[in-house]
Image (cartoon, rainbow, N blue to C red):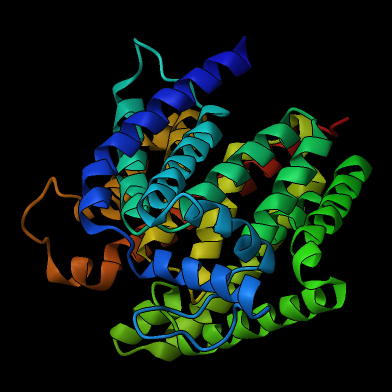
Length: 376
């Protein structure tokens, strides 16, 4: 019954978000992101290498070979129908991931509606850019919900699928390995290998291995030349690049230690997974140089999870959610204070503040559990 209710909720919310962005998609057609997907898929099937230098009006294709292999299916019915199908898939999977954690009820708290609106607006931004971030966010939330419910096989498959679409989910899988879960680990590794056969069936196994190496090289080289909304980029705009690098490394080191200690300290069945996810995603967005505005759709659902876990901080959560999302919505026709709206600075600050808060809450939970005695 619970799964059916979540499916119904995800379908309704997904359809609503899709209909809201539909007029814009019909008007604008494919943007540079979709054109890059199309070119990557075409080069994969015709030339065997989607990582060549792009033509004018396209960007470099940074996605794994599996992504290029399956995106041909979206272009098969035509460019515009493919865009609409892609947008609806992203919208539905995003809300399905949220629905695994949050149920919209008639007598819902005003705070819940506020954070739900924030998540919907951030999703709208991602859909307008026709990116894959909403799809990835939904898959990660879905996988984490399966892990929470001790369905380790499903969780491993979903994170492997996400990794073959974009590499970041493998980082979450690495943390979930601790302490080692045999069923999860086996499912993840086997799923990675099975899904590898999709591009390998087109270009061959040796070529597929080589393409994964090329994808890794192109992505890491892009890290070194493109810094958008991470902490280093934010401080660089203020003239303090070295300080930004210190904050970046400190956030990565401290954040990783908190996440690892929490995984070892709190048993799987008693962990606050919504809070753990929120801490991980906010840390990731703070330190990864490729973080950009549509990427924050990964973080938007976290406010829904965390205000329920720590209601005393709801005003702080609301302020951070406002700074991250609503400042950039069409609700306000005029720009806010230049310092915060320029280059999405308020998103960077809100995300960093959210990471500090969630890290504090995870540490506090570990301390409370330790004082209450050993856990079984």
